[in-house]
Image 1: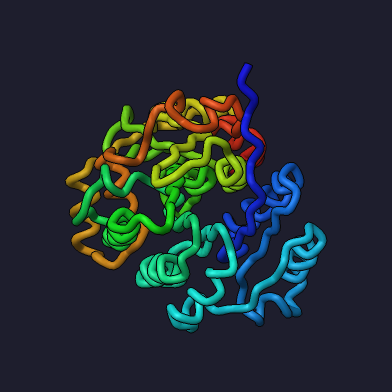
Image 2 (image 1 turned 60 degrees about the vertical axis):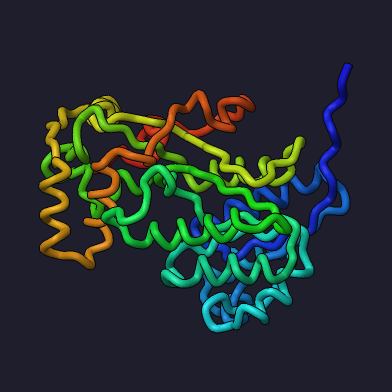
Amino acid sequence: MTTATQPSPQSILVLGAGELGLPVLRNLARVAKRVPGSKISVLLRDSTINTDASEKKLEIDELKGLGIHMIPADLVNDSIDQLAEIFARFDTVIGCAGMVAGRETPMKLATAALKSGVRRYFPWQFGVDFEVIGRGSPQDLFDAQLDVRELLRAQDKTEWVIISTGMFTSFLFEPVFEVVDFENDTVNALGGLDNSVTLTTPDDIGKLTAEIVFFEPRFRNEIVYLSGDTVQYGEVAGILERVLGRPFKRNVWTVPQLLDELQKDPTHHIKKYRAVFAQGRGVSWPKAETFNEQQSIPVTTAEQWAKANLPGRK
């Protein structure tokens, strides 16, 4: 009978503690208890660590209470060398700062990670499958993510792991995305009613990322797929009808229509995303092929999320 390999202790640095960073940190702190000797740290701006803002202060106090160490640094303003010096003190670095820091930041952080000689790097790629989408897509930020992948693949000193999660579940229902139009009880399907989208909540991504980091046999130089749910836009209308108890119209926004809208307003981020998702490449994958399904880890479906968050939505 074979016995499962006991995970090795790791010293882990998470970059950022926002919408995704917080769930990743909470779950790493939980899973690290199973691996004695592991240490979790978070890199934050000094002003965030010493904040007076009550909501942020609560989060910082929570992280300190979980035994997470605070490392002051600035991902945007510190140099690659300064960041590399910090990263070098850890076994694993996980990028959770998103693209908010700007288009150049993912490449800057990946360069710092390689320069530091850190053993394993998880870049901020928690989203769609950029390689399947390919270069020159309507969302030009995706090309910057492909640059990072090429940089990581071109070397063999630092192991890398990319976690593909699809879209954050909540974003599908955001009024700003306009796929779900609550005012007019309409679902605007991107590209077609049978087009699919993969959705995962940040809490599930946090839970699954922590498991992946400590998983044995260790993940090395590969893409790991997650899915809370993979749904067609036509099914989204059905979910809303069941949860909210009223009919939803089904409307299709075609690829030519969305590309035309983007051409008229070429810097509009949401219009870029809508056009990419409408093209239907690299934005969904079967749930059966995902880490969570293969490991039988329960996750939140789109319908469960809607039941918990949408009732009372007019």
